[in-house]
Each structure stands twice: as C-alpha cells, then as structure tokens.
Image (cartoon, rainbow, N blue to C red; front, top):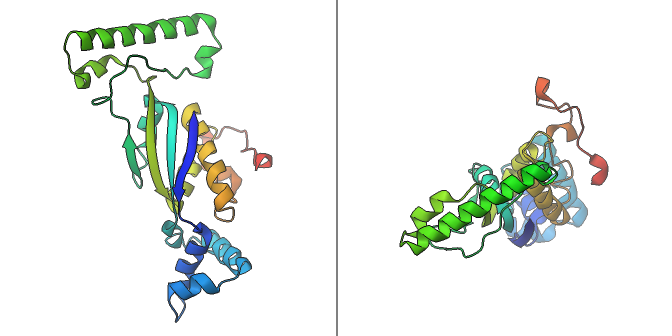
Length: 224
C-alpha cells in the first residue's frame, strides 16, 4: 500500500479558524486569516472541534493518491459519500500482469496462500484469454477477483476525514481499510495537528461506542 498526499488546503488550520471566527466578527475572513496569531489559531480550532462547530472544519480539504489496495478495500472506501473519487478503470485499462492483495491471515497459512495464489493466477489467465478471444475489457474484467490491486485518488474535507477515522481506525474495522485510514491520519496530522489531536475511534475520546461489540483493546494512543 502506498498513500501520498497530493494536495491540501495551504494552511488548513488557519483557514478553519478564519471561517469559524467570521461567524462572530465584524470584519471579513481575509482580514481574520492574516490577523490571527498562531496561538489564536490553535485555541480557536481546538474550541471548534471540541464544541462540535464542525461546519468550519469543512473548509479545509486533502487529496490523496492511493495505490496498492484491493478492490475489496476500495469498495469500502467509496461508501464514504462526502468525498470525490477517481479510480483506475477496469473498462479502459487492460492488464498483462496484475498484482493481487493478500490478506495477512492467508499469507500466514501456507496451504491457504497456495490456494489463493493459484486462484488469482487462474483468474488472470482467464481474463487474458477472454481478451485474446476478442472480448471487451469491460466484460473480461468480470472474472477478476476482489483481491485485484487498484489505484484511486480521493479528496475529503477535514470534517469528513474525522468521521472516516472514527469508523475505520477502529480495531473492529476490516484490516486493509484500517491500515489505509491510519496511513491517511498520519499524513493529515502533520498538517493539522490540532484538528486531528483526538482523531481515531471513539475510545480515543471516551467510552467505546460499539457497546457489546467493543473489542476490549483500546486504541494505541501512545503511538501518536
């Protein structure tokens, strides 16, 4: 998996602070943006996040290039609807070779790994044979498995990322999208440390919201 931050709001926390302060100021957001000290920005952003005034947080956005995830993972990712996506198309891209994402539980089991690899190879061989038979890529792709590697560009605003991290950093999230969410959190936390100081699953901020389905293993706060 490779996750890269392609673009972002140049000064995300100052932008958020200016938007939040505008609600109560007689001057414009451009003046507010320039006039606030770094300490004022931190204090206001901390207040906005803690108080739930998250509309201001939406004014910062982040764009990620994500390579080396499975179609199974991307299908989970695009369920987060407050985002923009562009994904490598299996209709228009054809493959001579294709990487497959192997779950750790399968990789650790020799017999299961051999069976998994053989099935993926058979799928790719069938795909290429269909192409050779003149079948269009948009139809030949039907034989490709969920394990097929894909690439996607994702843009989310800072508020949606908070929601994404709350769900997908949880220990109960599926392993691949959890790894993706943690990698994305690491990147945005460098740029907006106040916004994402308490980002992650519910156990970072209090009691686990999963109730009887709680994993019993708190989020490793010491890693951040």
